[in-house]
Picture 1 (cartoon, rainbow, N blue to C red):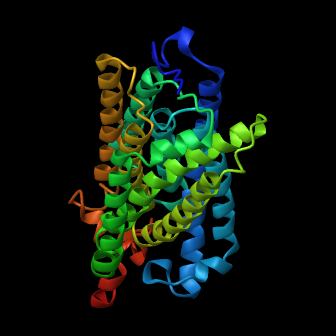
Picture 2: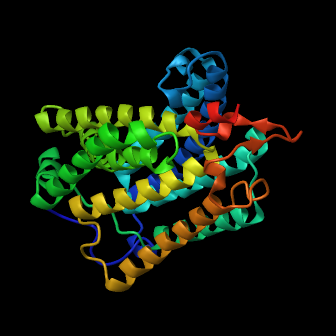
Length: 346
């Protein structure tokens, strides 16, 4: 199996391929659409919750809300761009660029939803950009794949099968045992399911995207059953993520959900990609360490966004996940309160 990863990083001008450039552009446009979709969907969830059972409480009234569907369409466009990006560039390059969606989401939440963005939140946004740039400049080249059978061989190696098994077991345990008890009070519950499932989904998206790219290039991969297995996994993961992301958005602050989801999703996706596609093979220790430093910089930025959100409204950095937000007139807004605690406040 050939690999264009050998001999340099994305930051070496002689190593920049047209595929990586296409993947980079698609990833950036994807972040723009996805970051905006968080806000549109949040507005739709709020409108739907005012007239029916909230998504955080297990309701599906948002399905008849046009604004939610507008947000969903925006997200789909972003995901399509993201899907295409994975067909051209490795996950180690594409996934960290989702940091841009955090910045867009946080800024729009501040402007449209009235969710305060502290000055240190702005610093966090800058750190996300710096970290993403560092990773882009040192990311490996995309592995050259000639057939979906090669992808299937990678996906069925013992190391990745072990990872996939652990993910499935963890998701089942969270959904069955922890989500009913802690879903309304602990953001990690819903976001954890989204991130774990998403890491497997991205690997399948990348495999399916490469298969389609080969098909459009004249080598039909739709004849292989492995292509359709990857497609089924993609659909399953997408619907699972959509369900639990809706629950997270409806229960917790948008500017909190976005960075935590990004950190967990990106970390697990990079781990899955390194295991399945062996992205770091052929890179020097310096390149790998630099990529990790860039990722830590992004984590630092998202941490600042997380801890400084609503700093003006509450005295504790974690209290915004437990206590009400306030509107401009000083009136309590129960939208930010976990549902199971609202009755006790009345």
